[in-house]
Amino acid sequence: MGITRRQLLQGGAAAVAADCLLVQGGVAGASSAAAATTNPRPVHVQEQANPKADAIMDGASHPLSTRFSSLAAARAVFPRAGALTEEIDFWSIQTALDGARKIYLGGGTAIVQAALGIPAGGNREIEGEGSGVTVIKVRDGSKSGNLQTTDAAHSNPNVTLRSFTVDGNKSHVAGANQLDGIWLVHCDNLQIDDIEARNVNGRGIHHEGITGSEPVQVQTWTRVYVHDCNHWGLHNSNGVRKVNYGAVVALRNGTRTDLSGVGPKADASTGGALIDHSEVTVDSLHAADNGMDGIWFRNLFSANLRGLRATHNGRHGIRVLGLVDSVGGDWLAENNGVSMAGQDIWFDGTKTLSYGVTTGTELVGLRAGPSKVAASAVTPGNWPGNELWAIVFDDNLRDGDLDVSAVRVRTGSAGRVRLPSPIGLLSYRP
Image 1 (cartoon, rainbow, N blue to C red):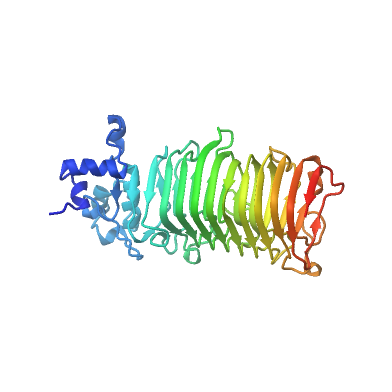
Image 2: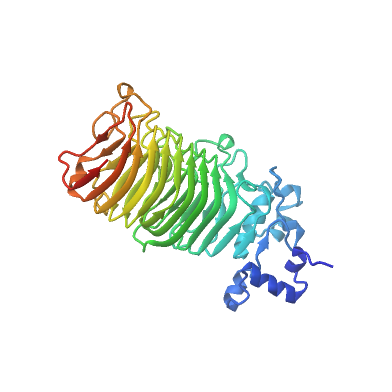
């Protein structure tokens, strides 16, 4: 007779359970102090030792009152429950997160009335059955994100998010809140794989370091799909180093027009992906149909940026600010500037960031143009000139050393390249 996961969680068949711990990454060898505060077994939230703790995940709202007759009865299973109006799915997942290093979410849609909190100190792994298969969705009428680190003042290392979707339910949330779907603070050794963020009223996925602290070290983002979010689809910034991105897609983000001064850390610039850190590698990043900038690289040192695609974005396709001692190539940016003045590729010459203007960089293989909006219909913006260009090299770039070769520009209303005057140390070879 086979042994079920629930029997293992209840402690049956000790030898088999021990094997299970080894195979599934449990921490049976951890110190007694750690074991006293963190459940050594991975927890499957739909199949727990106590059935009253199980998540339902059928996409419907299930308040605690549907399972428990009183708040005291609910707290016997979920000690931190605050009211019987709160969701069973939320407390099933949150209680598992509070006590276990790794939790499994089965297939289905979990409804949450507040953002699930990764405990202070990180060291948590959350795994579902696949993006689009396992979904964490904000309850109708709630002012909430989906998932966040709870300590914004200290490091939260060793966080892994794998194979699930967060749905911000933006058309059914209360007020004009600008809360992020996934909000992470200072996560060293962050692993994000097969994660989708959709329909979020703020940013889809937002990670940031802590100002004045040591830089965040080592992150991997693979198979990330952010779409239909009102702010940035993906925003990773502020003291982050050594990051790899692969197979990132950002579609139809950055659509709000009331962002200035709204919500925490409001930024009037929005779009597909904002990446702001050093020692970064990008293998594949596609941004399309975003409201403002498709891709914004800002303040990067020792970067390798390849496989970029930016099409049909509202303002700039690819915006580059402060790209220092880096390499890249295979960039395609076409038909951007859909709704406002912008360039397919813009090398911004602003000098306000720590690495300075773009310098010491070699790029091979840029293809751009034409932009979508006719030049006569464009309102002048805060960038060089008031016309549309396929590629713009800002005048301030004359102070740096930039080598760009194998440039291909399509003809059309913006089938041109705007070079700085004087050109200075820019080497440009179409």
